[in-house]
Length: 492
Image (cartoon, rainbow, N blue to C red; front, side, top):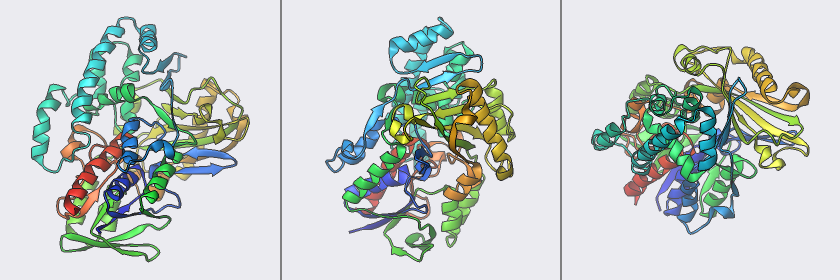
């Protein structure tokens, strides 16, 4: 039996491990932290359950497929429920927009902003369906290992004007600025600037419309726990709280790995769900080709980081939906500050997660769990002392939620803590504290992203946000399918 190690128990690593174990490969997942999940880590504090993220679950069929490979049903281990509206979008002037896949309701919401844009939205939806078919259905699970594969995809990408940004495509269909924001903000959920991210990412709209937005009862951590349960049921092994410190190579092949605690494993192949730069520069420091790749990786553009305020408060808030986007007074200018100028602006846009409106068990009785997330520049653009500025930034975020939604928020807080760019760097070895790995611009997509199999070390593979197709749950689970296909072809 072939033996494989997967480094990192995030969504990508676990999805890959399940695929390999289902196919009869002896698979061990090795995780640095005390709990699995990677970016989907969680904390339990004072009776509140806080998911680190990601908290927007889409394309549930890609997850169900992981269980179906061995004749099981995901419902054995995970209870998914639909979320509606998908998001409530709110602007400083008090305008609300409930975003869902219910046609009549959505058209009514659009008409409230601008009746003329109802027809434009229908055309945008048609465009989104086209890029969904070409960019996700046909290419989302296919590895791009050589330039020929990119050339084959080029005509379809050209037909949909992939060189244009999501925002510019949306703006060509609808006139109302708030609606333009409502139909373009999704790229921020995968680390992309709507003003620069390829219009192919407009496929997210179709993906959500068709598959819905879901929540795992108990939190995203319960989806991770279900994946672990299923992986171990199949015979897979998980090693926690023991980071890999060295991937050993002989010539152009990986031979084994060693962890901080001295655990050693001989392997037929290694797949890393860890940070790309960390994997190449630190774990493969004995490989010259890996060091060359690390240098190239460090010259690429990385997505921003995040500042996340987790807070548990007294009271329940049935009027605040599960997912809200609180837009700030600026859109394009704020994005330029985050992505280009490296400025921590006075204003911000927030994603507010309120899981207890769906599952009250995630907080003590009569209380609620929330987190507020603000995109911020990564540490390469804004090398600040976050320990010094974090408390003030946290207060500004809570003040804004107080102004917009919960007037006496500070008096109601039972427990709170923030997660900053330095935490992404320290806990996840994320290069520059980036929350989403490589920025999803056209010149860093498909063939131009990190390859699912290394070009020079043929039994070294990658899975997760830095590889094709990119960040977000459907992206990293899709990368696992692409990488598993290569590994099974090579190993069996």
